[in-house]
Amino acid sequence: MRFAALAAALAALTLALASCGDEEDLGATTFVPAAGENTPPDTTPGVPAGSTYDVNGNEWLKLADEERFIAAQDYVADHPDECSTGDGRNAAADPVRDWADASIGTDYPLNVPIAELLAEGCAAALQSGEQGLAPES
Image (cartoon, rainbow, N blue to C red; front, side, top):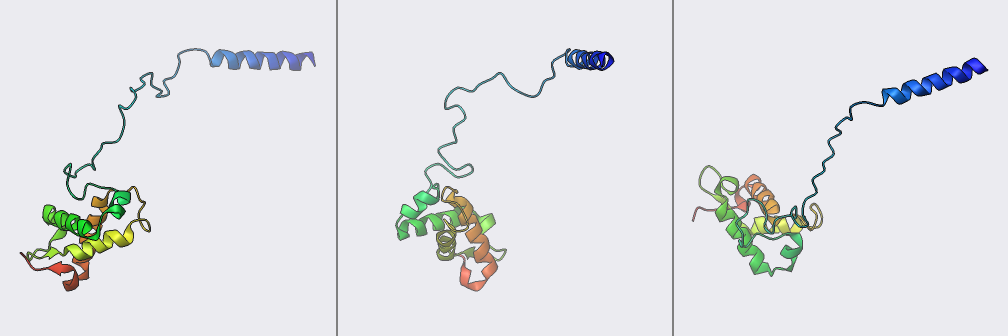
């Protein structure tokens, strides 16, 4: 019994000594950012500030139908690489706007930047063929 107690005490001492030594850096930081320093930007990254499509889904739903059409039209005009075919036809603003209208709140959360949905709308219009394309203006 005395031998078992001595062995247990020796094992405890060995473990205690093994845990001593250099402190391991676990990646914790002592830096704490100032309040508001890491707040998200007021605009959508990659979207010009003040553009008609610099809104999130909640804001999009509050826009009038004509305002959403203009935003989709502006997006198509501002993104020719994403919203046009090789033969000079662009995605029409109507199906692009309709894609965003149908997707927001169902397939995408309400806080998503609308520019993401308009990009998806352009891709859908281009894939749909003639009914989703407008002739070159």
